Image (cartoon, rainbow, N blue to C red):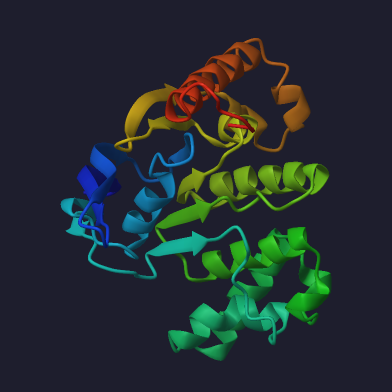
Length: 269
């Protein structure tokens, strides 16, 4: 069976004082191959914990993750991760970073070179392939991170606030790139974000999670990701359903934040 199954996942963290934090409780979700899911929620709702469990970095206290019919039991190249900070090898060039995965697999040099050159074209870094990572801007570094992830040919791409540190213009360009890569590669993508606008634009499915314990509060199926492929994302935001959905989700998350903070919540959702 192809696709990703999140089956009744719970996660409890035991504290030194004998207490415990229930980060997730009975979270279930099925994702078909090629679906694009964005996940939102207030701080403490367990969205990053869930992503780390899918990645295999954490073992849940209950439930299981299945990918293409087999149980996830740890990290594996079939699940690629893109972090907020690229987690790149700064002492290597762009090309060396992207080729790292294929090289570790023992792939033939000619085959690896062909894959790397193609991906550098796809993410628009062909002219920078011999630059060292530390010479690049934040947006370019995230392009390298995307290409390096894709070079391993994972079934699922996991993205933890991958665009959160970028300026507004670069972030919008990168959102367009994520949509193009999603459509061209057919990869399943799960993206964690704190931005409601980004979740709307990059999620054909969108989950709003609630905290204490972390659980799925509401799911949306949205047209904006499909509309945004190769399009001006600012035009997509003019769609008549976009504004009302954005306000509904903002209100939902704000109400959760106020409940958490006892009616004194501050800052952005």
